[in-house]
Amino acid sequence: MYKLILVDDEEDVREGVVREVDWEAIGFEVIEKAENGREALEMVERLQPDVVVTDIQMPFMNGLQLAEAIRERFPTIKLIILTGHDEFEYAQRAIKLHIDEYVLKPFSAQELINALLKVKGQIQEEVAHRENVQLLMEHYRKSMPVLKENFLATLMNRKLPREEVYEKAANYGIELSGQSFVATVMSIDGVLIPEEELENREELSKSVSLKYSPDQALKYFALLNITEEIVDKHRLGLVFMHDDQVVVLSVRESENREIALQETMKVLEEVRQNVEKYLKFTLTVGIGTVMKDVTKISYSYEDAVLALDYRLILGNNRIISIDDVEMRSVEKVRFDDVKEHALTRCIKVGTNQEIRETMDELFQGIEGAVSVKDYQIYLLEILTCILKAAKDSNLNVDEVFGDNFIPFTEINKFTSLEEAKHWLAELCASMMNHIATDRQYTYKNLVEMAKDYTKNHYHEGDITINKVCSHLHISAGYFSSIFKKETKMTFVNYLNHIRMEAAKEMLRSTDMKALEIAEKVGYADANYFSFSFRKNVGVSPKEYRNNSTKGQ
Image (cartoon, rainbow, N blue to C red; front, top):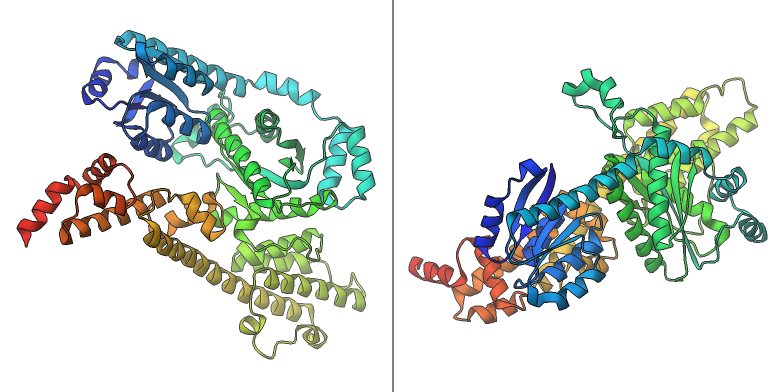
């Protein structure tokens, strides 16, 4: 069943359409109805339907403004416009928005059904195209010349001389003439099969959908295929496979780091939505630091991989930018080693059990295999890694380890590897606990700052989540997740709550008109204020004032 939202300002039209169409028979479910564009947009953001059917002429936000907002943020949603004979100038504008279907007023139930079936066919064709396993396998055999793939892999793993980078890029037809470079890593999330479906696991794996397919290579190639299509459409940069994951190298003309990052994130969000909609599985995306030097792309890639590790804390099916979760220093000294990365990841997002296991792996096979000097150097490398992690996390070393902490002199006191391992594990555990505490404090602090800013600016009509995030210098996606986790409500709901509480106070304590109160709580349109007030409070502003007066 495809989910649908119906939008029309006339209640009899909405109810008539719902009543006259056998929705289940044509494969649709009306999950919500709205009477204006603003209300509909909030529903779309919350429910993300497959199809929106909307009238053009509506108060507060008309159908084309709604369509434009949906196209900008949710490009996979299908749009059907209801238009009258005298609205062709609107229809001309609608063509530019790539509206999927039109239904001319007055219309019959069958005419609307015909439009819905056409849209349903489009969705099914797109799904079939995305899931055509034979086509994917054929394309899989023919893609990515080996030399080009090896060059891109090298570019991700280590610094190359500038001349070599541009010479090889030219030979392989790779465009790297930009001012900013951002590496991104995409990882497919695991699929948990419900217990009741475990018995049918073999049958699920044979289904047309890739969701339950055990063939990870094919799933990643499907992801590669859809990512290439969208990245090429927006001319974002390069897409390729590396270390069994899909990597996007964004090459931007802008020297502004924020612009380059936002352009990249917008395209990746479109990829994420398309994958979830058409391939039926989810992915998590890690975004590295924006680099202005082409020779330092490997640093951005390293940060992207580290950002991906934060899904253990933030959850899957999202985009995670390293700039949001850590304070990165582009020019910092880097110890490019697999063990170093594993230990750093463990300290920052692991558990006490993982720390012990990681330490066991780091010390496994050392006995008798190295000289005393090599052993001491190895301990110094581990210790340096730990101290670097403390620095990256802005920890106060004296506060974490004590005032008398002189780490490099401790190494010479150990009489056994077990003693050294235990000491290092204790350092890591102490750091991990402090990082977790600081992170929670940071979350709460960000939310409190957002609340304070909202309370001081709710009367401004243009206050949005993007404006708050710009004030806090974080991305909207990261902030939305934190705000909802800490407050148990979305930012839009919180803003509405603040405005409604302020409006109720003014209605109780002043004789201002509703028009004046609407303006003071951030509504440019007094009618929409009254509409929202009734939706949130249950009565009109006038009824609320009268009831408050009677209660005194």
